[in-house]
Length: 163
Image (cartoon, rainbow, N blue to C red; front, top):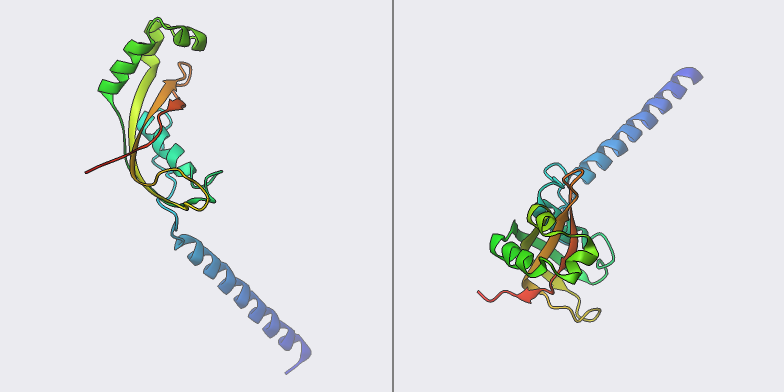
């Protein structure tokens, strides 16, 4: 065997190893399971749908500052609560708080909703005193009139769901 064919054989082996590593990396990434909860939605996420904004916000909880004490998180349901929305709009209409935010009565009617989120989480109680288990919370959202995108302006403290 001459020197040139040995060199070609060596390059072929290196190329084969690199291809195997690349395939293994792709396979591993595609099989990754989110150990702390649901994957963060991306394909179906629509920021013009309030319940999507709330779900995304709660799932981002896993990615940001609360990661060190959140052991698991699963959003069970997120939906606009029409009755609570109506109640809060009536509370805010004409109030100093609404005026301080630039909310007119008409603006509230068009660009304000309250979503209820039900989620299950497990927290490390050596790092936080926050409650865990099956919880519900209300999330207040305002819609940007220019692009229709909802953003969170406030939320209530979570309460335990007793079923």
